[in-house]
Length: 417
Image 1 (cartoon, rainbow, N blue to C red):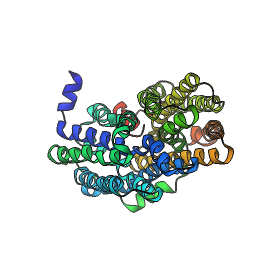
Image 2 (cartoon, rainbow, N blue to C red):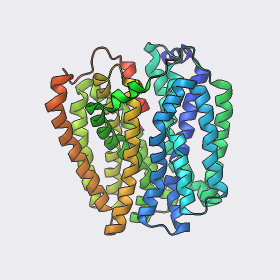
Image 3 (spheres, rainbow, N blue to C red):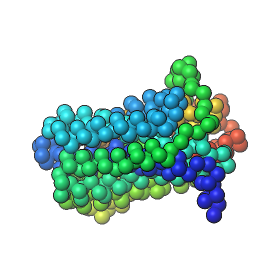
Image 4 (cartoon, one colour):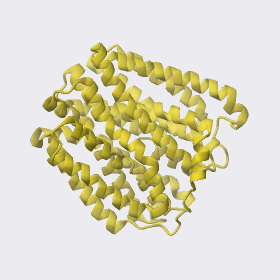
């Protein structure tokens, strides 16, 4: 009953529109991941080319997150969202009818970044309609759109068996079109639109050292999560010989772990301190990646990947439990910047995995590299916390009293992947 009352306290139509837009956009954003094994078979791609294929949509999302946020501030989330949905149709139709070479498919992937930047529209659309005491519920509902990543892992390979990979890209235009129609009729601009941010405000954050540390940490957690999510179908298919549909099932299970456990990372950070929890998670992820690098039997590697993705998802929540302690006043600008950095990390990971597979003939060196990055992140966090943060602004490892629980939940859901 309390959740129902919370939803009714704002604009339910806009909240549903935000969820649907986020969900379908994320589904489309990573669609090349589960289709990569089909595309690679048709085009005879190397491991490095496969990595680039699944990395380009993530790069597009990273590059467009901040511009989409600026457009949302200036023109409102409804107008920006409608434009984003129309633009998303362009690469889908092009990929369906004309993408017959690797260059064309990678161009499609880069343009699909518009869908990956959907959070910059969906979350403000929901947030601006709800009072502070119900922000947690509103952001929880809207942020549940992350489930679209799991859906595409399950559905895309099954559909490709019947209509081919180009047909799947074309079919994706149907839910985007339906979402456009519902978004047009149900979403409304909130009367509480904030003033657009100035270029000086953005520049001041870009020049801040602490912001770049958060960029790095989130590039590891969210970047690791979304990068692995896009690459796992390739890994399960090429390394363990799983059928394409079954590889999608295994990948979906691991992606689900990262999405489901993300809020738990935020909860534990509230209780025990964000730095303490994130420190442990970096070690956890490093250990899991080194375990995966041994390329153990399929049941064992699946458990390790599930655990590793779980740690990365929890790490997303932990990072954004710490951010508002340092950037309470600039939180909107900082979250956009850090979110973009997370996407850039997700672009680099499959690129490195593919290149290392071509150079060495094995996937293990990619996981060794990621394990090293996990431990370097642990060391870096310890050093920056001991040398700067605990003396300059972090008086406690618990949240500052000025940050409401709903505010922390909102950020945790938005940037969890």
